[in-house]
Length: 362
Image (cartoon, rainbow, N blue to C red):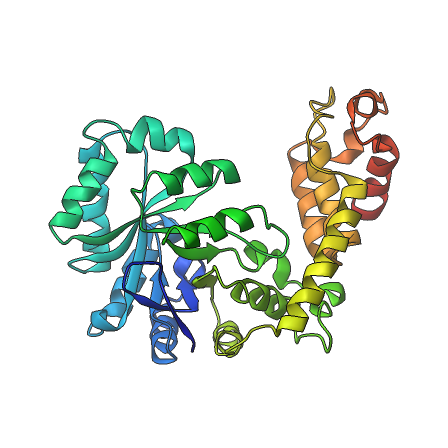
């Protein structure tokens, strides 16, 4: 296992972190055993959250920590449900009890955006004030956040100076936070990445993805994880592991001193740029075509098509389309009114491409 300094926190983290969101909760004994095995193999960063697995995740992680709390860097999350510091404190105390621990190493304001920060976290007598008190008391050691918002707002959160580490989405399919990740590293924040295999999307077999570098990789999941770990601004990549096979495969990748050689990185960068341009032939995601009078989510339909045409992720593409169909937002609802084409700044033949989506994915 390779380890890296976690920003300016003074902590060294394993490059691979164990995300406890996908533990096999139906077999709690095996779940605890799997976490223990990960710790023995050298993973020292465990990430969970108050509501993962219907509230069971923290309890399972707590069981695994018994007798070896000092071997583990523990991360969990507090949902910012309101602007009350008192309520934030109650949720912290609940997590401490479920984890059966006296302290949490990295405690996250969970899934925040800029609006939540301004109106709840930074409010008078709010979560930020309470977090500072909890840190003084030794209940938490570092104040962190996990993020779901626009990259420009990620920069704003970094610039508040109130956080020591962050947890953000980053993978082969979603590189929107790449510049902000580099900025965070420059500012001294520890950077943890969630979704390195795209929430499972990159775990599906794909010849196009597994062959992105000369010689290829064993699987698209391996390629995805190697890509994330090759970014020098990423300290730890979280993987939600539910089987021994996943743990062993990911451990092998995280044990490589150089997940990608320099020439492989350069070639991969060129190929990804080409794929980005190819994806934009379907849609740039600007949203000017919306709203559709029939409720079709045009950019989302084209995203599913890109998974198929650009990345070879057939199952992921079809699952995405089925979800849109269930929400009555799928391309099949198009009535060919052509309002979208009149608004598209790229002059894309939207209607024809929606027909192609239906043909390939419906």
